[in-house]
Length: 78
Image (cartoon, rainbow, N blue to C red; front, side):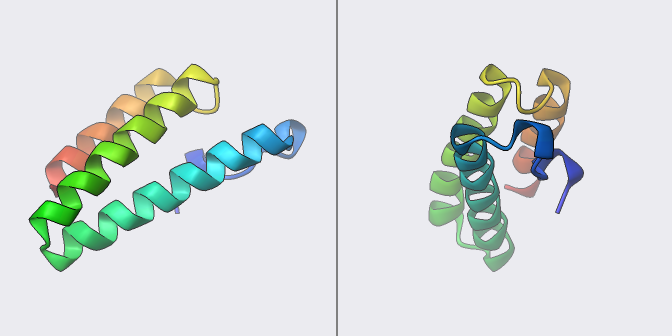
């Protein structure tokens, strides 16, 4: 797992943990669908993963450039 999705103990509050867990889940589902070759499922999971990464940026969980990098990687995997 990438380090940008690890829990920061200084920010370990319920909403923060909830967002980080949602990001991890969305990314795992997308990567699993992409590796399985299921295009329809991967596209739906891609949209959700991008949405969750953008939410993380808006809540200052990850940097906007890191988010852009991850979204680029998702697009390549699609």
